[in-house]
Image (cartoon, rainbow, N blue to C red; front, side, top):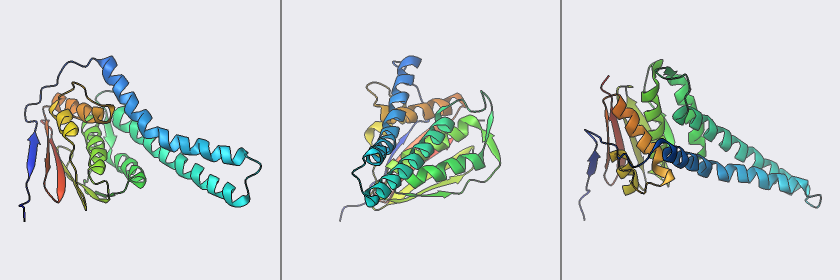
Length: 223
């Protein structure tokens, strides 16, 4: 039986690849947000088409309403998440309530397969730290596509996010983004590059590791 192997990609002294300017980064992030929203918004449109069709019976109309409700709920969760994780909430240098961040993730995790286990205590934290938590938590959800648990533990200065489940994956492109490698980066991994930039600005670092049972992200901030 092959031994479980653990790989770790650390960014103790990250150096962002400067091939991307602010316009390119904005375009890539916008593409990521649009990709996340296209399915739930499309579901709303499909449901409305059914409701507008006079030939549809009551059963089909009720199914259409369920589709609209589901799509609307997912779209709201994704937009609320994007506003806090990527937006300028509170302005520069502001703090974000951890209760608000937890609520955003609770709603977001209603749209993915793994469950959320939030274990960070506190009232408020620097905006940059919270954004990194939000971004890495969503990335961790992608690491357990068949379901499992994403646990967030530690404190806002030094925390870990661990994804465990029946199948765990850690994509090379995600690791590259967390290293600061931006050449040919796909929109899906733009948030990870942003998380690295936020940590770097605070004198911190991010690492990612994987074994047969879990994927773990660790982030530490210098102050």
